[in-house]
Amino acid sequence: MPINIQLPLTEEHVRTLRAGDRVLLSGTVYTARDAAHKRMAESIREGKPLPVELTGQVIYYVGPTPARPGEVIGSAGPTTSERMDLYTPALLEKGLKGMIGKGHRSEVVKQSMIDNEAVYFGAVGGAAALISRSIKASRVIAYEDLGTEAIRKLEIENFPVVVINDIYGGDVYIDSVAKFRQDK
Amino acid sequence: MKEISFAEIVHQVEFMCQKANFDLGEDVYSAFKKALQTEKSDTGKEILSQLVENADIAKRDQVPMCQDTGTAVFIVELGQDCRITGGSLIDAINEGVAKGYSAGYLRSSMIYDPLNRKNTGNNTPAVIHIELVEGSQLTLHMTAKGGGAENMSSLKMLKPSDGVQGIKDYVLDVVKVAGPNACPPLVVGVGIGGNFERCAYLAKKSLFRPIGVRHSSKEIADLEEELIQQINRLGIGPQGMGGSTTALDVKIESEACHIAALPVAVNLNCHASRHQTVQMG
Ligand code: SF4
Image (tube, rainbow over all chains, first blue to last red; front, side, top):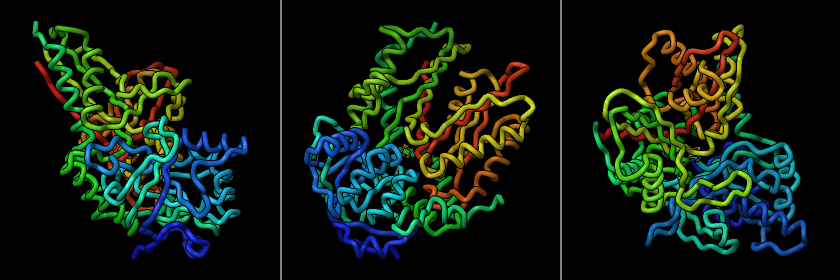
């Protein structure tokens, strides 16, 4: 049975979640991918304020397709997270508690998640039409000039994810894969 | 001499781009259903059933199955007795892509220049390979190729002494390194032989063969089967979250090569394996 979580993420949530848990997220998340991360990292370096207060928040790595007239958002599945790795520790230090994406994270990011008590969720890459059904509202709140890469505030309901990395060093991509491996 | 008009090509390409992104091929869809029966992991099963549901929604609502609506890649078989009227074939394909992606609300993922990285706004240019063939027909094969799986693809110039074992080891390595990033379950395209650039092309071309259809040569078909088995024993599973469905299929194409060479290319395709073919003339 999946665990239901109402966002923002609390310390308690983060401490109870374990790699491999199936979770349904509801509440607010912010979208950002390569270009938005680059800009946020620049702002942090220059001591400028970020467009979003990150404490307790979750960032979703996504660049949706354009919404059709009358639609909340286009198809919106996760993109590959490792392209954000370079910028992620700085955001975790600003209080970011969760990330949704797909694929491996670097050792540096994994350590930073442990140090800053944050979790990494995997959504199903390529299940973008299905995922869009759990996005109830979408509004561009920063970096509008970046188009599909702008920062959006999303209201989500029962958004299906799996905990990939927990704060105890658990990693689904290593642990579960080892469990099903038959070649050795 | 058969004539095909610029406008007709534009029209067909526009249609193909949208259909590829909205309607998952029957071959991939039934491969999901089949994998659901055999998958050993509960999370893996859950993911596979989400993929089935996703394909159903995309088809019913005519929306993209994945937000990465891909680079539009074409393999064109141009009959040497076929003439394009009213403009160039390349321009017609690009105009069709621009129209199809814009009208279909598909994402533009192409940039003008890898260094300045500014989006072209309509997903052009397409990647177009033209093969001149006999006859007067024009056949367009199109795929919307996602970035996630393409990024994990690889090419290596093996030594002839590495042999078949070297090929197998290399393919398995590429799949292992890709892990979750290429959005498994995968379709693994392998090119063997040719030279450096032909080999990559063969790997891409192999992906156009529908899932479940084996190579016509028994030797290659057996190698395909063996690799499917071995890849599915790696444990990577759907989305790399562990399980027994890592590859839906393995495709191999091979070609003549130099006595000193054994080029091998592995072009990974994600489960959003989106292909369309249209024949004209
Ligand atoms: S790799 Fe394929 S399924 Fe995954 S996000 Fe890219 S296009 Fe979509």
